[in-house]
Image (cartoon, rainbow, N blue to C red; front, side, top):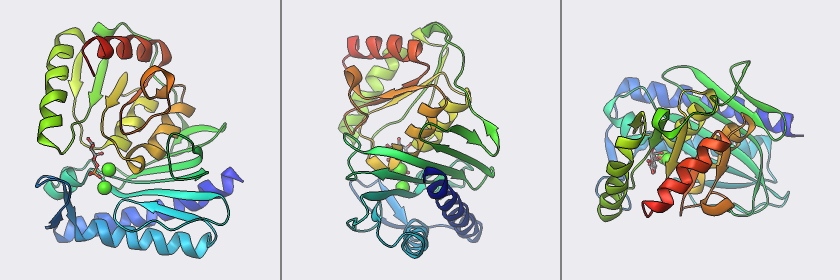
Length: 265
Ligand code: IPD
Ligand code: CA
Ligand code: CA
């Protein structure tokens, strides 16, 4: 079942990635701002979500849909598709080749505190990388299995994070990052949460943490990182949520989470 769902997720994500890449090539403009003046949406975000939604409705008419750019629809099958049509929209707008289409299918309601992720695909159209996972089936980039990096001390850890669109929250996040920076190898702010999680899965980052993510930002990447051996969770073993997400090799996650709690995350 999960493999059939993955086949659909991959086909739809790749096709949506081709559309986003074409729109990027043609030129991109801001269509509107959302929660704050720097939280923007382009026509390509909306068009890509419309395409994903119609392809999923054709393939899986009984499943629910929960995406960033349109209203949710309920499920009669018990499954929901969690979709970020373009994750990393600011990179997309500026032409930085690091954005993604993120699609996951979950059992249960579209709530990360209770859902069970079954299959996931994250595509970076600019690099051509296709990350996938199924529950219990491991995770892959293309056909290559993924494995998190070996354990390291925090002083050797390359850590990614992200910042909210809300200016006051950003200030607080920046203060914590400033205190952490002297204690780790370095910090990255790559701008695409789904790819941050895939990079933890690939061993390209030792750890990733963020506050204020929405369900569509992490639904697919969390399964991909977990299936590569990462601990992906919220604070104190909770499920990841808007409050907090951390992903890393388990002993690195333990050390980083403990330090972040001391720093008041
Ligand atoms: C954003 C990106 C970014 C993260 C933000 C997200 P969007 O998603 O994933 O890396 O730091 O919290 O909102 O707005 O580009 O879809
Ligand atoms: Ca996003
Ligand atoms: Ca988005």
